Length: 201
Image (cartoon, rainbow, N blue to C red; front, side):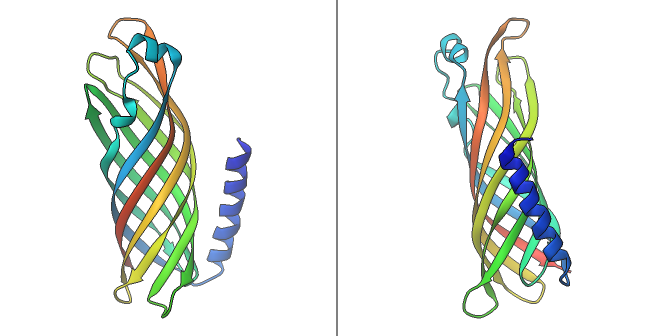
């Protein structure tokens, strides 16, 4: 495993163990945000397709997510699933995220408002579904960080706003139907600003 993933995995395991020692409440949540992707293309892809603007495909794309986990007074750990796609100039990309995250809470003023920050580790699936091209997909690791602010509305309900940055190493190939491989594209990173609502039970 890549050293950065090993360090994040160890930190997450220690954080989860610490959280488990406290009384925890289950929670579910829904998020909405906009995702921007940093796509890196191979030289052969640029030459064969005249430098396609693949960064514009998933650019400020609406992204819905569902999450579930456990929350304590000091932090939370949770799983998130997202599935979104977009099209630009005939190029279509679909991205699916399955992520495990841990956040630490820092109260601001009264205990109804908290800042949070944490780490994420998971899997990203990237699918290339462009017009005239053979479909291709790949799954690989992702690791990142997130931060934001959470506001309790009641004993059970809360809202939040945050930003998450993911580094990934997932890639797909592009080639015409029945033709040779034209090159590859790598999803280098994803950034997402989002808002969310949570219900604790």
